[in-house]
Image 1 (tube, rainbow, N blue to C red):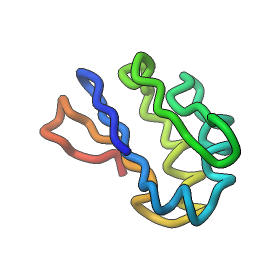
Image 2: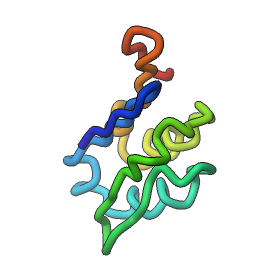
Image 3: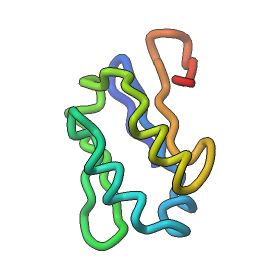
Length: 86
């Protein structure tokens, strides 16, 4: 799933969510600006109105990397030609 704001795009690999249902809960818990919302057991929603509030803290990337692996979550800097937050 992917949701784009004006400045930021958020992409979460659907297969990663299926393989590790706890990822949705952990993304919901770590995001300081509430971009991720767990809706039901293991299901995730990206809260569109909060996407451009991203502070590039990397917490979502770190938790996804620990639980699933690289590229399970991508933060895309639309203002920077689509570069991803590394």
